[in-house]
Image 1 (cartoon, one colour):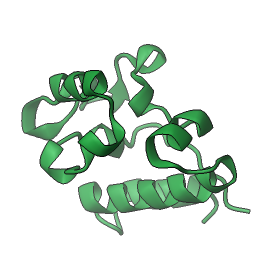
Image 2 (spheres, rainbow, N blue to C red; image 1 turned 90 degrees about the vertical axis):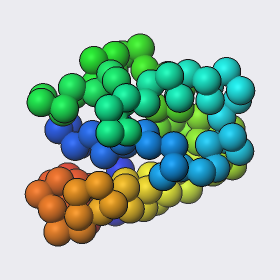
Image 3 (tube, rainbow, N blue to C red; image 1 turned 180 degrees about the vertical axis):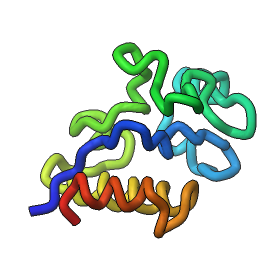
Length: 116
């Protein structure tokens, strides 16, 4: 079975460009939307993402909308816990493809980690 996991050194989800996510208001609270927009920095990347090391500077304190957790995805997207794995894999593959390319080292690493 293919199991989702976050792949260190990827950071595709840290590309926050609002024009790439036009439905933000549908799943973020007004407070979260304000926080999200305040995190958008240079060229659309999160201000907390170190683009050199490709690591989050606030990982342990990151906002709810940055976490892949059953309760969060149920609340934000209506995704049942048993559907989270497949949904998260599909989201990551789509986002990695958009950011780095579908044949990129990042995609290869992700697919290898999830045993796809």
